[in-house]
Amino acid sequence: MVNDNLEIKTICPDAEKSLFTIESTESDIQRETEAFAAVTSDQHNTLPRIKILGTGGTIASKGADSSQTAGYHVDLSIQELLESIPDISGVCQIEYEQLCNVDSKDINEEILLRIYKGISDSLQSFDGIVITHGTDTLAETAFFIESTIDFGDLPVVFVGSMRPSTSVSADGPMNLYQAICIAADSKSRGRGVLVSLNDQVSAGYYITKTNANSLDSFNVRQGYLGNFFNNEVHYYYPPVKPLGCHKFKLRLEEYMPTPRFPEVCIIYAHQSVDPELVDLVAKRYKGLVIATMGAGSLPKAVNERCLAQTIPIVYSKRSMDGMVPNVNLPHPLEEKTSNVIASGYLSPEKSRILLQLCLTKSYTIQEARNVFYGVYGG
Ligand SMILES: NC(=O)C[C@H](N)C(=O)O
Image (tube, rainbow, N blue to C red; front, side, top):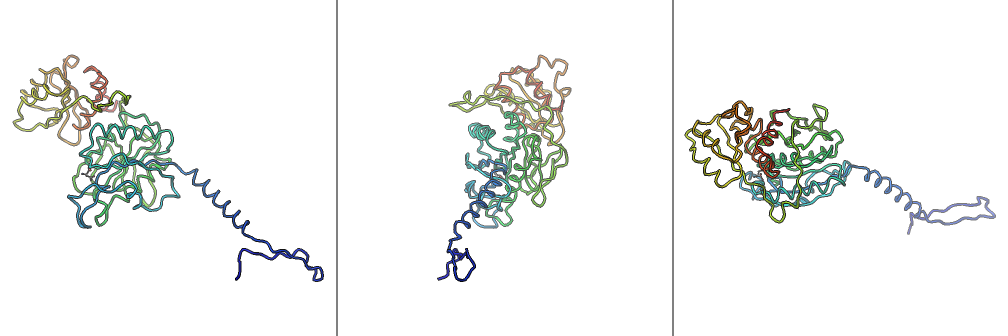
C-alpha cells in the first residue's frame, strides 16, 4: 500500500555507496498544518468580539406553516437563530446568551433590568453588542438603555423582525446578520444605541414603530443614520450621539429583590375625554403622561384637574411627529411652581420611561423639566 507520508531522500547519489533514508513527511505536514492553524487562529483572535443577547420577539418565533405571518409563538432559541445566518466567522467572534425568550409585550421592569445587566456585564470584554428583541416595544428598551448605560463608543445594536422564522422570506436572519456586521464595524463606534431593521440603521433614542405589520415598520423623523447593502454598512454622517440625552446612573442593588420603578400611567386623550381620569390616576400612580391631542392641547377641565394634582404630569402628544413646547403648557408663566412638564419630541411611552427614571432619582419637578427640556436638542 502506498504511504503518501513516506518520502525517499537520497543522501549520496553515488551508485556504489548508495545511501538513502526513508523519512516520514508527517511531521512536516503536521508542522505546516499547525502553523496554518496558528495563523488563522491569530487572525480569528484579532476579529472583533461580539456579544449577542437574545430576548425573543417575532425574530425568535415559529408559525404553523410557511404562509403564517400572524398568531405565531416565540419558540426559537438565540442559538437556533444564529444557525440560520450566513457564516460570519471571517467577520467577528461571537458569544451569545439567552436573557429571556418572550414577546416584547411581556417585557417588564424585571426583564428590562436583566437586559441592562446583560449589556453592562459585556461592556469590558466585547467590541460590540447585539440585542434581539420584539419590535412592538423595542423602541422603549432602546431608549431606556441609551438613557441609563454609558457605553462610550461601543456599538449597541437592537434588532428584530416582522415575520416569524418559519415564514417565506423571513426577514429575521438577514436583519440579525446585518446587526452583527454593524456591531463589528469600527464605523459604528460612537453612535449610541442603534437599531438595525429592513436594511436601515437608526438611532434607538428617536426611533418609533409606525407600522404594525410591514417589514418597513420603523420610522425616524430625525433621519436614518445609514443603510446596509451587500455585506456593508454605509453611514450618511460622521459618528454622532443624541443631543441632550440625560444619562441616569442606576445601581442594580437598589432594584433587588423587587425590580420596580415608580409607577407612571399614560392617558390617551380624545374628544370628550373624562377629566376625572386624571384624579383616578393621581390616587394610584406616582406620575402621569398624557398623549394630548396636538402640541399639548387638552380641554380646559382636564388642564384644571392636572394643575390640581401634586404628581408630575407630562404633556406628550398623540401625533407621531412634532413636539410639545413649554409655552403650550397650562400656566406657562408659573412653570416653576406647577407640576406639568412638556415632553418635547418624546412619544408618550418614552416620556413614561423618562419620568420613571426622574422619579427613581427623586428629581424635583424643575429638575425633571430640565431633563425633558434636554430632549428639545439643547
Ligand atoms: N414583530 C414583532 O417582534 C412583534 C412581536 N409581537 C413582539 O414585539 O415581540
